[in-house]
Structures are given as C-alpha cells and as structure tokens.
Length: 147
Ligand code: FES
Image (cartoon, rainbow, N blue to C red):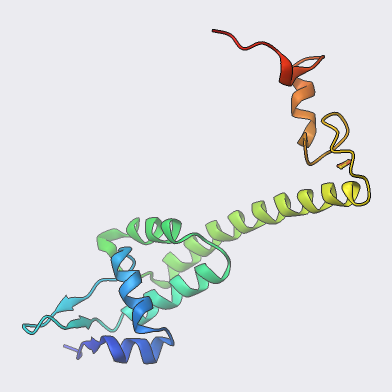
C-alpha cells in the first residue's frame, strides 16, 4: 500500500493552501482519514481530484455543481479518464450556454450605451426578448393582480 499524504504534502504538491484543503473537505469535495493523533491523511488520488476541482473552478463551475458531479461517480471514486471526459463535456455545454447569455447581455448593453431611456418597451435589458409583450398588450406591469 502506498503511503498516505499529510495535509502539508497535499498542499505543496497540489499548489493550494492548507486552508483550501480544509474548505474542500468541509464542502465534501475531498476526504481524509484521521490518524490516532487526529491528523489528516489523504490517499494519493486526492491530487487528481483536486486537479479536477481546480480546473472546474477555473471555468466558473460552482462548487456545489462540482461536488454533485463528483458525488455522482460510483463509490465516490476519483474521476477516471473516462469520467473526466464526461464531466468536462457537460461543463463545456454549460460554459457555452453562459457565453451565449453573456453575449446576448453585451449586445443588449450596446444598444443601451448613450441611450438612458430605460424604456420597458424598447430597452432590451429591461425587457429581454419582449417578455412583457408576449403577455399581452397594454401596461402589463400595472395589470391588477388576481386575489
Ligand atoms: S436604455 Fe435605452 S435601450 Fe436600453
């Protein structure tokens, strides 16, 4: 059996702060065993797991989504090459969706620059895709509420 790593060894080899490791552990992203003296010990596969977490964070995947993705793996295993291929594909799709949303926001902002009308009818940022128009004509925001 390979020697387990101390928290300091993991921090140094993974290039993260010890406090980050404690944080990841509190969020259920990594696990450690405890020695008789209550010190943390990590299996060597934790380094690959941390690499996956860091890359996912780099591309803006929320920690809760990373934790859910890692939890979805059988027996809580560290992602294999195939696991990583599947996870990264899903995350790329999410990234593409967010890029499209940001591009639409940027394009809407371009129309607003120097305008200042803040019009509910004309302004694409106040009423994206004319959502209010789809609900009917007239002053939709002033329509009486049921009840
Ligand atoms: S502020 Fe006038 S179009 Fe958005």
